[in-house]
Amino acid sequence: MMTIEIVFETHSFSVDNERGVATGWLPGQLSERGQAAARDLGARRRNDRLAAVFVSDLQRAVETATIAFEGCAVPQLFDWRLRECDYGERNGGDVHAVHGRRAEYLDAPYPGGESWRQAVERVGGFLDDLTPRWDGTRVLVIGHVATRFALEHFLHGIRVADLLDEEFVWREGWEYRLDVSDSR
Image (cartoon, rainbow, N blue to C red; front, side):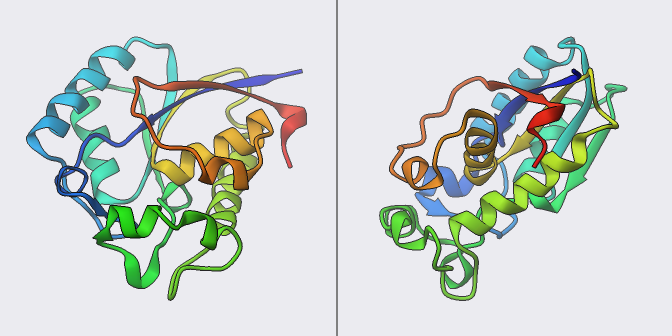
């Protein structure tokens, strides 16, 4: 059986993160602290046997990857399915107002947006497409909270409802294994 090693890192700290804003599908921009963290990510991961770096196409994730892997030969592949949950009319809203009521949007979409389950399923489609091309490799995924929720759900079997109760705590990456038989 072939396995894909997946390393997940969130995009670096954004100006919105520091202001308490839930950016959602808005582009966002890295803060000075975020730019430094992106350089640290590159220092940690450049020699990590990566076959590819998959990146959300939202600006804050693209900027993270660009800074982290500047001048590096590892291919960067941008994929819209790795985006954060679309909060619709609440994109750019107060983080406590948007995230404090996440459980209400497990299956019901945010007004003009998507539900958390829809966001997790979207990322699941990305996981399906990793096989067979990336079998036997180690890849990095740079994304958002919804990206991590999908990885936890599909690769560790955690219910989406349980993930919504979790408070996000930043750290230097999460490690996952995608067995080809895990494909949905």
